Amino acid sequence: MHAPPIAAAPVRVLPWDSAFFGFRIGCVTSSRLTPELLEATLAAGETERLRCLYFAADVGCKASSALARQGGFELIEQRIDLARPAPSAARELPTGFRAAVKEDLPTFTALAREAHTGTRFFKDARFPRARAADLYATWIERDFREHELFALGMGKQCEPVGYVSVQRDCAKGIGRIGLIAVAPRLRGHGCGHRLVQGAVSRCAELGCREIRVTTHSVNATALNLYRAEGFRPIEVRSMFHRWF
Image (cartoon, rainbow, N blue to C red; front, side, top):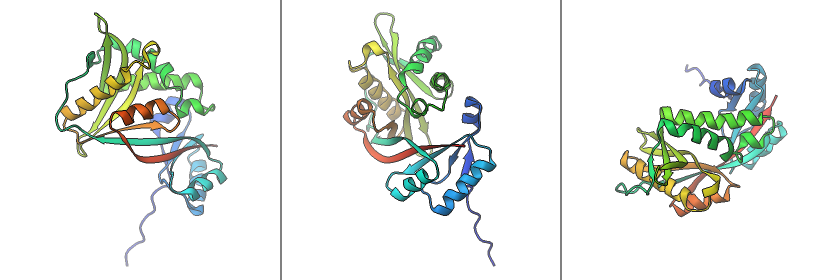
């Protein structure tokens, strides 16, 4: 006789998030819920002594979202994944697009603290606002150290006025745009397009076959930018938080 398959744990603890915010955080390992899985998920949250539990729900499964609400989850935002094929050949980089250098980081961390306030960690007031700002400053520093971070420079001194980070999955041939932001005084002047174009070109140089990016559904500016640069939606997820 064969032993029955062992069901995956309904919850995974997130060590980095937990350490950063100073309380235990986890995520639901499935994108869909059944009544039985919801019960097991909440029990696991209690057992793991979680303060907050993330759930990225399949937006096409209305039953899962309804069950999540019944279980005390709160809908925070809808996240949209977009993708486009990489160009067949690397294009000329936009004027001012360059690799970030260490001297850019003070400017970029300050920008990161105020540029991402539309995200779920700011929308959910139970996350300390100052710590949410710290999250994006830490994120941009990490991308500089561990991935690829690019700057958009302007003027004779090539002063940094925006950034975009890029990660790549070599095995899958996928490049991913991470954080992107432009200095407030230059928003609406095409800088975002130049950053995205530069990131796409860089992904092509690295041999990526596809480039992806994630934003949230109410960010019309970002959605219009990515659509104009050839990205199309491939997946939508409803992001829920459940507090214990």
